[in-house]
Length: 331
Image (cartoon, rainbow, N blue to C red; front, top):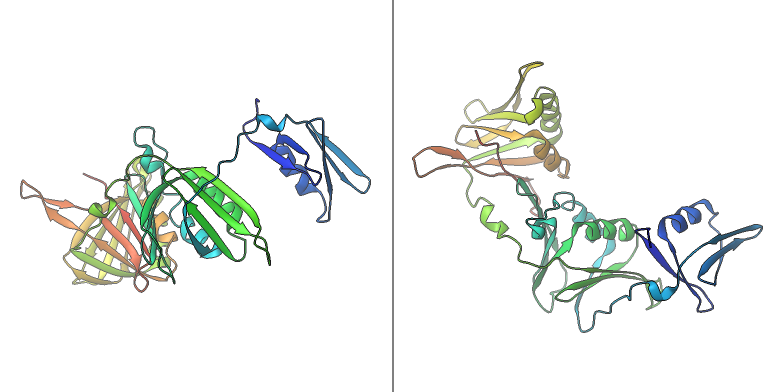
């Protein structure tokens, strides 16, 4: 057809027209929030309002893909706002990958009274949990394409009531209902990504060697300041000192200069020095809702008896619904 996105419009008199979605959406946005008339004629869509008339050229409805039905699928109902807010915490972490398509989406794990949403790009990982009031009839897992996840947030985040989710082995349906009726208001159907998601729990440190409790905004501002001297590699170094109860931040650029600061904090465990890509840390901290966060570091001994830096964890000091893992820069 030459245009990527099309909309199938069904009018009141059972007429149908397939028109460019972008043009239709932009045109409707310019009209006042009052009833308008839609009519299909000769595959075109006629839009009228008082003294206003417009015609959008379309194509036969037979050319529009058939919307599949998900028969016999399991379902779960979750408040729209809660689901979309949780999904927004991890959706941007996923990274499109031809070689590893399974990490191109958001991984969902439906358990008895819990839904886990996971996304990774191999350098960092986010896990968001939603605790359910009612137990699910069956446990399952699936990989939702990132673009679909973003569309779910755009479409349903401002809707009131529940979002009902139907899932089958290769498709998923998101549905919101009309107020005071049992008729669907919006339905979004998507194919799922095939394949097995990596065993992400294996990279989550079960035991950390250094734990830092720190004020989020101050930590975030200091990292952003250090980033000005991080150079092309985006590297910012950290040193946690339990004796002095502080964390030191350092960055250096051969052409610009260097930056050094320290933040008083509660440090437990071993002294540790580690380097990260500051962008990943900033992204993780911005997802934290609480003002106090835990920054946990991991060091381990390799086969050559050398100390190696492992994955670091960012999480709230109170809630346990969101976990952010970031890998250090290997020296």
